[in-house]
Image (cartoon, rainbow, N blue to C red; front, top):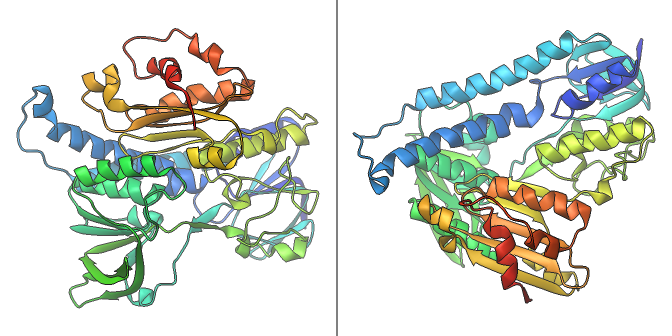
Length: 457
């Protein structure tokens, strides 16, 4: 049985930042991967989806040409080219990571899915290997909602959708959160008819109602049909391969028929595939591996990073998990999980950028909270770009003067939100932020000025 200093299970985004450090520290490393190298982000998430979003925006802006005095001919979409572009992007990134790891001294690659055979041993097919330290980076997968009739329907998830060869005439999306909304808008802009069915009272159930309402207005303005308070009851597929989605909305029976069905109803961790019981690794009631402030599981020599620990289902939080692990492993305490300020974005167009608390979380916190909001239509740069949808919201603790959170739904929101994050880490007063002199004309330059509108919740 081969023995290693470190066994690294899965090749999500933290792999590329931590494995080289382990090797440089003189550790022998076994990397175990049963699927595509690069994890969800490279293969089924950020890389391909944002590539599609970029193509969709190009089509959208081409159609908007006359709004800017630019007259073109008829706009058409080459869907095969769109998909070829995203496939080239994700395959190149995945293959590049695999080749890089295979060529790295001190790293041994095992192709296959891992399962624990003991506290320090891992089974991969017929191979059994041992490791002093084990890092679980095995990610998650799309949740399959047990809807009656689903076994007889050709449904899609975020991975299967990326293998489409023809543009769906009518894409029905079950789930009105981040993945569902991004795909819905992108495919609408590429030419599909799109319907969203969401069981909650508003889209993006984790976000504030005003943010959700603004996003709904954006999508509906582009011709997407949205059904809220809608609970899917049954699925069926006819002889023409069209899919019927039967749902109950506000107590009344309803139905929509589409050519393709995307299930975007959340994700589940891959913890159930690892035989964690053999290693004494605990999971919570949702199946996520329980970790402490340094990514340590209930077995002290085993660590869990990325989507599988439930501490932030984003590429950047997964990478940060790896940084936290490395700090602890290398004898530093520079980073710990409980001090992380969560920042993220939803990549509809215009995008939503979010950091820290939402308004509803701030209200529930019991703090003395100040809030300022401003519609994007009052921001000069947004008007000049003729992209005035959305709003900005900033939350401050009146006592400590620290930022509690911010939301920017609007042009550049995914980039601008990042200016708040370092400030929150530094725990500086918003009054210092207010003094900043920023570049004109930009959307970002208005962020300090918005603080003049702070009022108690």
